[in-house]
Length: 489
Ligand SMILES: *[C@@H]1O[C@H](CO)[C@@H](O)[C@H](O)[C@H]1NC(C)=O
Ligand SMILES: *[C@@H]1O[C@H](CO)[C@@H](O)[C@H](O)[C@H]1NC(C)=O
Ligand SMILES: *[C@@H]1O[C@H](CO)[C@@H](O)[C@H](O)[C@H]1NC(C)=O
Ligand SMILES: *[C@@H]1O[C@H](CO)[C@@H](O)[C@H](O)[C@H]1NC(C)=O
Ligand SMILES: *[C@@H]1O[C@H](CO)[C@@H](O)[C@H](O)[C@H]1NC(C)=O
Ligand SMILES: *[C@@H]1O[C@H](CO)[C@@H](O)[C@H](O)[C@H]1NC(C)=O
Ligand SMILES: *[C@@H]1O[C@H](CO)[C@@H](O)[C@H](O)[C@H]1NC(C)=O
Ligand SMILES: *[C@@H]1O[C@H](CO)[C@@H](O)[C@H](O)[C@H]1NC(C)=O
Image 1 (cartoon, rainbow, N blue to C red):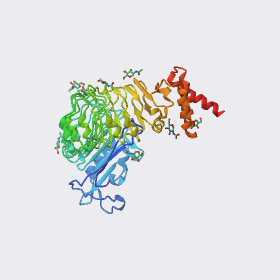
Image 2: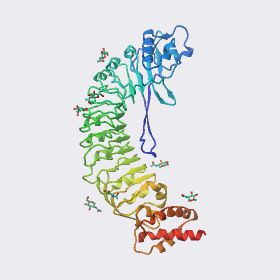
Image 3: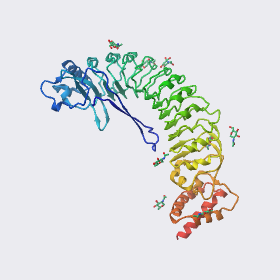
Image 4: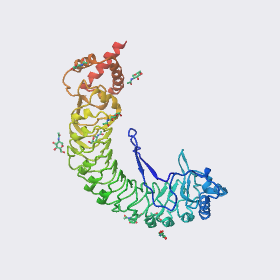
């Protein structure tokens, strides 16, 4: 790998098909090192004499044996073995040192040596690699679950990246990891770790990414303050207590994910300082209201996911979303929110996905929602909304079934806004007292041929369902369908 350490972080919102992943690229300036940093040409042109440090080579043999990779012990010089997953660097005497070891088939194009999951363990010989910067184990000890070894702390200030992902590690996070003072990445995602988050994880000035998600950690989130931290993921644990206000000083944060915990209290006002934040997910906790208006100054935010927290005692201020000009994904379902849908939402030109369903929103859908040209999925169902639906024909057709409006108190559609399939959604014409046929004919005469085809298809689907309940105001569309069917003969 190149000496200038480049880290790609891809933040997925896996559950939104439509959202594209956010890619964050971070480059590091060089780190003081006894090794010669610079482009590595590899061993192919490495002539006479250059070889791996013998103690480190023996340590690598041990580590490979411990993971069931005995084949490696036949390789006379491991740095020349050139398997994916080992990286070496020369010192000034042209002796090569191991700087990176990786295991596990992360993807098709990163074919690191796999582990024999039934008997693999982490060999203590790792502590004999004094130049090790990266240690990466993915799905390695799954059938032989073991705690994270305390001896990893002995890697001291050299180790920069520690990834122990989906290894079924048990027990608690050893306090000894606090000894890793120059860590940039600590990733313990999806193990069975319990106990609390050690407060002494404090590589304050270097930590870029901390991922402890998918464990059974309890206790509260320590009052971390990491100036260069980009990614903080503690989702899917059993964490309690409130979100520490000190996180507001982690001004480089790009992603915060605390979803699926038991956090209480409110989102700290200090979060308003997180100007780089792109994704914030605190869904499915026990956070309380009022709605966190401090978030309105998060100008980089692209995804805000607050669902499943009951914070709706008061209405959302109408200008609440004005600052979030880049927001693409907004998920506020099941939050017991009251009052009107804020108008500032309709001014978010980048908005693609908005789930506002399962609340108590009342009043009408803001008329500026018709300007949300990039919205491809909008859920407003299960609220108390009334009045006309402001979307034009094009938006309605584009969203199709991804526009959900059912179970509101009094939404209605205007005859010419492309809402002929309103049958399915239990929504009637706004002016329900006039005879429907007249309007329908007018509408029909307004259409181009292409539009009519679509109308028939949609109506045909709708008519099938009308056997359950045909409402007077809906007869219009049925009439249209019959009329067009006859014409077609
Ligand atoms: C911490 O690191 C130092 C060297 O930096 C080492 O001597 C010591 O044993 C380590 N302590 C633990 C608990 O890992
Ligand atoms: C953590 O898990 C281990 C085994 O998985 C168990 O022995 C230990 O009691 C647990 N500790 C806590 C604090 O729950
Ligand atoms: C964490 O869970 C363990 C049991 O697994 C319990 O003994 C301990 O008190 C809990 N800690 C906190 C801070 O709730
Ligand atoms: C809307 O989407 C189009 C096409 O995907 C894109 O070119 C445009 O920049 C988007 N507008 C905003 C405000 O995001
Ligand atoms: C919406 O509900 C609030 C109470 O939550 C009420 O005060 C207000 O009048 C309602 N507005 C409309 C338009 O129904
Ligand atoms: C309609 O929405 C309300 C929330 O506004 C919900 O409590 C109720 O269960 C929903 N009814 C149906 C039939 O889904
Ligand atoms: C369609 O009908 C409306 C009246 O409902 C009228 O204002 C509009 O100009 C008509 N459009 C076309 C293209 O005929
Ligand atoms: C309408 O139905 C025809 C034939 O069944 C089909 O080819 C066409 O794609 C449908 N149009 C839409 C918009 O579903």
